[in-house]
Every structure is written in C-alpha cells, then in structure tokens.
Length: 315
Ligand SMILES: [Zn+2]
Image 1 (cartoon, protein in one colour):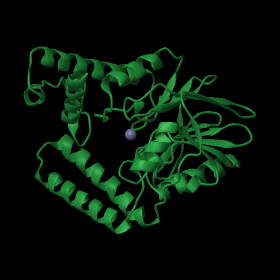
Image 2 (cartoon, protein in one colour):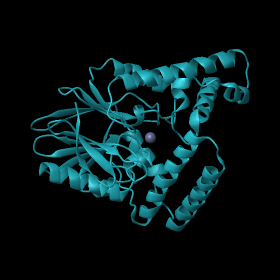
Image 3 (cartoon, protein in one colour):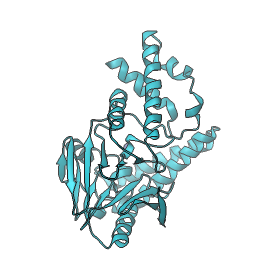
C-alpha cells in the first residue's frame, strides 16, 4: 500500500501513490506532526508545515527535490503550533486555511516578546522535567519525555520563528485543481480545535486529517459532541487511506476507534451528570477500559474527561 522512500532527521516520507506523499514525524525531532505533499501536475501542494522552521524547511526541500516542481500552496489544517510553525518557509506560496484558523493563528501564535516567550518556555520545560522525574507511570513518563523533546526543538528555533498567516481563506469547502489532480478541503466545524480542516483526494480516496484523527493518543478535545459529529460525517466519505495528524498511515478503522473513544466518554459523562456526580468523582472513579490504557498524551485521559464533563454540563 505505502512504501517508505526517504528518511530525514525530522520525518520519513512515504509514497501513498504516484505523486502523493505522507511525511510521518519522527518522535522528538522537531517535526512533531505529520504533513503531506501532493503533486498537482505542474506544481505542488503541501498540507501542514510541521512544528519548527527547520523541519518546515526540510519538508519543502524534500518536496521540491523529489518532484522537480515548486510548492504553490500550503494548507494549515488548524492553528496549533505543531502544524503551522514551519509556515515561514512557505511565505512565497499561497497559504490556505479557514477564516477562523487564520484568526486564531493571529491571536494565539504571535510571539510578542521573544525574551518573555523564551522565559515561559524555559519555565514550562523545567516543570516537565520535574514531572518526568517524579512520575512512576511509564506511559505518562514516555509522553512527557516526548513533549519535552519536541518543546525543546521549538525553543531551539524560537529566535528565528516568524508567524506567517494564511492569505487565502475559506469557510466550509475549497477545491483546488491542478493539471493532473484535484484536492478538496473541508471544514465541518471544530472538534479538536475551533476549526478543523481535512483534505480529501476524491480520485485516490486518500484523506489527510490533521488532528481529527490521531493514533493511540488522548488527543486534546475542543468540542466533544461536534468532534463526534465531524467524524461521523467523515465516515460517509469514500476514503481508503488516512494520514493522521500524529501516528502512522492508517485506514478508516482509525476513525472508528476515535468515534468509539469519544462516544464512550460522552455516554459516561452523561450518566455521571444524570446521577449528579461531581466532576472530581467522575474523573477519579473513571474506569479506563484497557484499549485506551496504553494511549499516549501528557494529560492522559483525565484532561479529556474534564473537557467532556464540563462541555456537557454547560449545554
Ligand atoms: Zn492540534
């Protein structure tokens, strides 16, 4: 189905079919999330720019040397830094996102004061280090170590980081047609972030999901019920291969796993609210089923349980 063709310091490149490549992040090296390279015929489209300018630069270099073509478009799936901090390496291309993602990149990612930002990050890294040293949970420890390594790479690049904003904005759907290939961008709303875009290649039946799909990860939740609705809508689309925001190339079963995960927690939170259980008791007494016990994430399942309970309580 896929074959690994290039290994770099930051990611491995996998050919999914002729002219479609997935860049799968190597843990702890400054790519942090996955990206995509699409040969449209005369030019290239890149999906997400990775977590650091250094990794973004390597992504562009690989894309252009592999194909002998130039990048014309960059897509930002959502505003999180691990997907957009490589943007400056694509500043001469057309950067595309939803209106809301552009707004959030502008509001939340701006580095106003480098010294202050550096101090905050140093402080955060120190906190992580203390947590790493004190935890006895090996899965949590591994997640914290990975977070520490990735954040250190962002800090290494912080002095050269420039926030470059998307300039071609859309609301729900945008189709981009090249000489040989068409891609469709969709935003069904906000589940993981306030606005989540995924990219679909209808002829090849391949989708690049951003963080709407991740592998074995307690992916942060912005709106649990909308997340579930989005995934159920995606299930209606004819997709054979998905490239998650984090983790390996997969099939639609990865979406099913996430649907089960969200449904399970939402159901349990509804029961807890019906029984007037407090948030604290709900989180503490939650019996994590074994299929999620090995999942990674610095805040584990607890942060997601808290988000879900709180969101349902408000609605
Ligand atoms: Zn994200």
